[in-house]
Image (cartoon, rainbow, N blue to C red):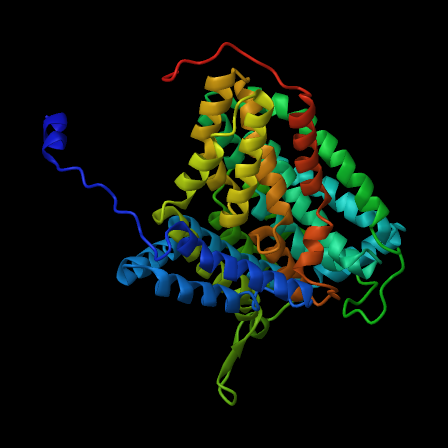
Length: 471
C-alpha cells in the first residue's frame, strides 16, 4: 500500500541555483571572502568580529550574481537555519556562560596557585594540556566540546605561569581534533567507517599509528615552543588563592556528562546550573553577579549576559559563513569539483592523492569535517576501494585524518575561533590573532604530513579484493 502511494507522488527534481558566469560566478563571492580574511590576517586583524565584513561582502556579491535572487536568498536562509548550526550556536552561548562562571568564581586563581605551588613550568604546560585534552577528546569524541571544556580554564592558567599564549590555544585545538579523529564515538570516525563499509573498531585500530605519530610530533613541538616559563607581568590573574579550586567540580561535571554520551546541550545546561549553584553556596559569587540591570545606562550585565555576549563574534560569523556554504551545495560546486578531479586517478597513489586534495579543498570551503567526510565518502569508496582495491579502512583513514588535520589549520575554522574568543574574555593576556593559533596547531600539521607521507611512499597501504559496484 505504501509503495503504491509513493509511486503516485511525482518526483520533483531539485533545481540547481545558477549564477552569471557559471561556476566562476559562484566562486567569486568566496574568492572575495578568502582575500578579505587573508588581508585581515596579514595586517594582524584576524578576529571573529572583523570577519563579518568580508563575509557580508561575499553574501552581497552572491545575491548580485545569482540569476534567481529570491532562490539565492532562500538558500542563504536555509544555510543559517540548519539543525547543525542551531546546535552549534546554542552550545557556544552556553559555553560562554560556563567560561564566565570559571572566571568569576576564582577557579583560575586556584589553578594558578596549584601549578605554581608544585613548581610546574609554563613552557611544559601546552604539552601537558595537549596530552590531557587528547585523553578527554578521545573519551568524549568531540573536538568543540573539548575546546569548550578546556579553553576557559587552562588558557589563563598557562599564560599566567609563562606559557606562550598562542601555543596554549593551539594545544587545546590540537587536543580536540586528536580525539575527534580517533575516538570510536566521534561522528567523524563513524562517518568515515560507514561511508567506506568497514567496522568502526577496524578503523580505530588501523588509524592509531597515524594519530600517535602525529601526536608525538606535536608534543615535542609544544615543549619546544611552549614559552619562556617566566610568570607574565601585568596579568589580571591574581596568584596565590586556592579557594576557587572547589569550582573544578563544574568542568568535571561537563566532561563526565560528555564521557557518558550525554548531548552537549544537555551537558552544558546542567553544568551552568550546577556551577552557578555551587558558586552561590560556596560564597564565590552573589545573585547580583549572575544578573543585574542598570536602568541608568539601559544595559544588563552579569555572568549570564557577559558570558553570552563574549561569543557573539563567532556566532554571527558562523551564521553568515554557513549561509554561504549552502550556496556551494545548491549551486552544484561540490559535484563539479569532485567530477573534475576524480579523473586523475590512474594509480593507487594518484587516486589517494586526489581524495586527499579534494578533502582539503572541501574542508577549506565548509569548515565542517563530518560534512566533508559524508560528502566525499562515496567518491573515495568508488575510486579507492572499488577501482583500485585499496583496503576500506585505509580509505576511511585518509578521509578522517586529512579532514581533522585541516580543521586545526583554518583560521576561520570554528575550533580556533572558539578558543580565541574564550581567550579574549578570560582576563588573561592575548597576543597575536587566530592566525597564530593555527600556525602553532602542530597536531594538524602532523596529521596532514603523516598522511601525505603515507600516500607518497605507500607506507601502510593495503589492498583487498576489489568490491563489486553494489557491495
